[in-house]
Length: 410
Figure 1 (spheres, rainbow, N blue to C red):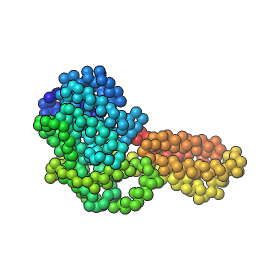
Figure 2: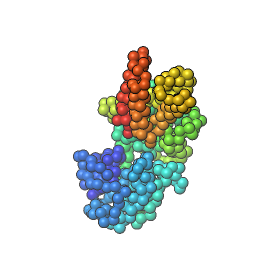
Figure 3: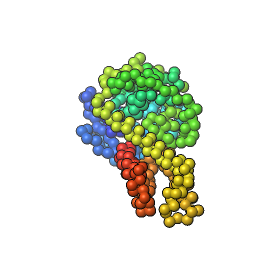
Figure 4: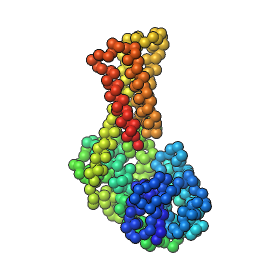
């Protein structure tokens, strides 16, 4: 069979590409950017045009749409990438009698999905199921696999000495391993139904504690200590910082997990996803990458703490701050305003560093502020050159830390 996989650069798409090649199919992968070592062509849901798309689909028997975005960005909206673009493609496939297998997400099968991400998925899913071809929509649980972002983030959580858990102890999660998913898709391709259908694909549900315990075993670690976070604490945290995102900790993911736990699905296997994952140990490269990522988050928290304490200590030790700023050619009245503004600015920079969408800009702003502070000390406060606390040297260390975070920011 001639198969085109959209989103072949992603975790699921690339795994399916290799598996279907191994099955003897002719497979082509498509994405916005070139992919090494595969049969590749360009495709972008922002640029679905009938004539060009028809040319790309010549000779294709099946299109697998594995494109999806978890967060919106400039030029990548849920509406365009997961709704409007796919609908155009599905209409073209229908006219050309090409079957489509749509990779959707669990929760999108509901009439009123709880997030914009799921709502956009549902719009495209329903349009596909209403076409005349016997298309298939698969509503996947959380997919586990070494190349998956969710698995990496959950594994980061599992590596901590004290593992924080934000869900109830008895809450079970709908999971599926990439191997379990691939086996089911291969079976569907070999036994394609005669009419349009949809399926929810999950393995035997398991608690987050069980998942994290097995992830530790998978990475070759001993059993960890679990710390249960009270839900009111998280509610207050997201009320203060609605866009907070550290690893798997963000408002949308927790809302989706909570919603999943209230629904009932029939698993496709009695084996849990984490037990499927345990059949092969995590690679040394995977563990090394996670260790570096833990260092990234540790440095992130340290830099945030430094900015917060800088602003708070400036306000608490106001007279000391006045003595320091007295070296500047500024009126006393304006000096006090400048101290307060600088302190509040430092606190804001510390808090906003935890907001993933703003992080790159905040880090660059922090670097600029550090440079400004350093220049002020060099020009107006020569008495601090040989100060025992070496503020200039520490500013340089903070800049190195900020540059590291800027380079590693994903």
